[in-house]
Amino acid sequence: MTYHNDGLSFRNNAVFHSAIDGDVGHREFQKYLIEKFNTCQLPEIKNETKRARETLQCLQSKKNDDVEIAILGDSHAQHAYIGLAEGLPTRNVAYYPINAMPRIVDKEFLAIYDHLVSSKSTKIIILTSYWSGRINEIPLHSSLENEISMLANKLIQLDKKIYIMEDVPAFSFAPEKCKGVRWPSTQTKCDENRVAFNGQISLFESNLRSLAKKDPRIGLIETRDYFCDERNCKMTKGKTLLYRDSNHLNINGSQYMGKKIVENSAVLASLANK
Image (cartoon, rainbow, N blue to C red; front, side):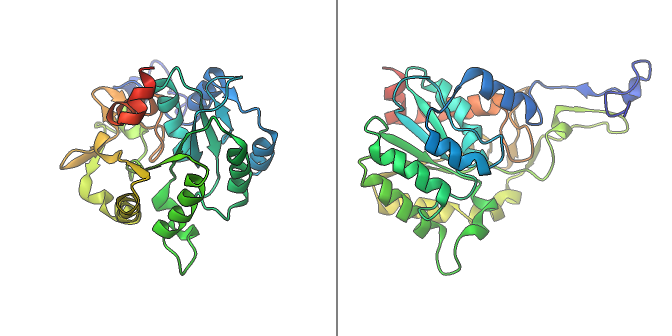
């Protein structure tokens, strides 16, 4: 227990030496969400998502205004929320949690869909998920492209602009290995060869890109290059840690990615500047 809590101060080898800034684990991230944003005032969504983990809360950036932009998905949608909400400070951005791959037949989504049917203010919907981690949720004789296409078309019929967001790299190690060292370790590890991610990317990338290419009403938000160069993918930017576990962004990471997404989307950038 003493070692786990940073060791004894007079035994320097036992002390964790942090080299970079950034939260790890989920406590600080969830605390930030609770302190900075508002719980949705939508009982039908709140009640339906009680079955999900308590950390997946329905949120909106402005308490009483009508929601203009909605992010739908699991914890990988949630980790994008901080950055997108803060990157669009004049807009009311909501996160509607779905503790599954977003599919039109999912009961959690149907509660959200019923709300979106009646919402005239929500014009932009961003769909994302831990695509590679939820690929087994797709029915045997279907595909990711088919499932998301059915969902997107249902939302487009409500006169919504739809974006599909790719996922961030999932690393094979925890960010504690990047954040610092503790004896007997002597080196940090913050990156991984890009080849290591080809398997997970192959599970969703071609399906999502094909869908966006076939239907001009659906926009694709690409995110991998924010974390990867030609050779490696990194969980840092300079001396700032971007991940809180192997596949979830921390506060810094969400803010970094959200800023990039808004800057690189003509539609979102125009909203940010109004």
